[in-house]
Length: 324
Ligand SMILES: O=c1ccn([C@@H]2O[C@H](COP(=O)(O)OP(=O)(O)O)[C@@H](O)[C@H]2O)c(=O)[nH]1
Ligand SMILES: O=C(O)[C@@H](COP(=O)(O)O)O[C@H]1O[C@H](CO)[C@@H](O)[C@H](O)[C@H]1O
Image 1: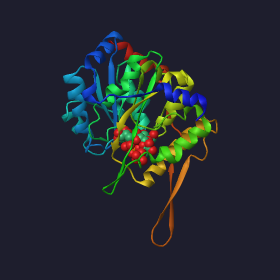
Image 2: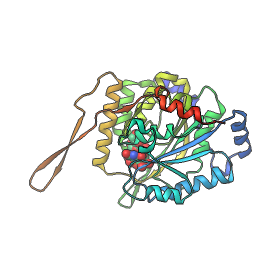
Image 3: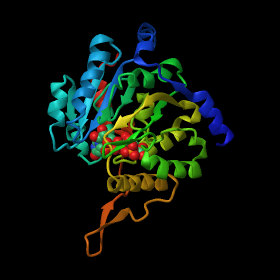
Image 4: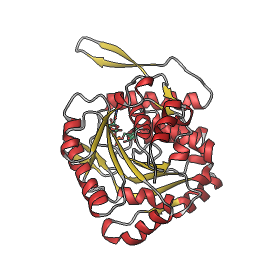
């Protein structure tokens, strides 16, 4: 690693306490001292199998038992299953991405759900969690908030973790993060070596100050994480970024072909941010039908939403809501 990346890695990497080791009083004092309001946003597309238990645990722990979280919102990203109903039955608010900022229409993709989730919430601190997480991840919330509560210079915190890959019933201890290891990490090391200290640049768990998040664009698809990292580096500098070790992260993993399309969106975003503009914007993959290879192409061109701070409808929304 370059000296600046190593210095960052050593000074801006912390570890999240496990739930039992947390000083809950100190955590709530820090929240009150900073007069913070905390929103947790989970983008969810077809996550009926996992979203209910996940949000029920988070709600019980951080809304009912310990008042750390003020808003817990699932953003239904055009799900075709019972994601919304399952999440509502678990006692949390659900909004359809298409219903947020309706004047701006609706686009597919995870980044669109996150942008709409930021617009639909009011906390000055916002935590983003994937909705397909497995196991007890309640400590992720205070872990991600910790650096933001402790240091006003920190604007954005990425979770990092080991990522076992569960495939066909077998678990590969560090097999997860395939797009990270095979695409994002090599590209970021080549083009933004100052970001080489990020263990999980694509990780789906992160938190930030609304004042920063509303000043960057949101790539509409899977390029959103790499886009946010690059854009927030430009906005707040390496000193405004941090990462926190959350332990182990398990989730519902996709197959190679789907990850190939995800990688295509990540590459398109990186090339666009590196000034290479839009290449072809198409990714062609191949299947074999027994007689020969059959190409099939998907669009991976970068589509993004502007910084929310530039959206009049959003400013009006904030103006109508008392934040505190
Ligand atoms: O169009 C989409 C695609 C994904 N997601 C959500 O974004 C998170 C991460 O997506 P996914 O699990 O597909 O990515 P992976 O974790 O496999 O990299 C999950 O909560 C998805 O439900 C979403 O809200 N809209
Ligand atoms: O990190 C990665 O390589 C990908 C795929 O992870 P796995 O190989 O399925 O564990 O997962 C992440 O990347 C996506 C694109 O940035 C994020 O949207 C996901 O939340 C994150 O899990």
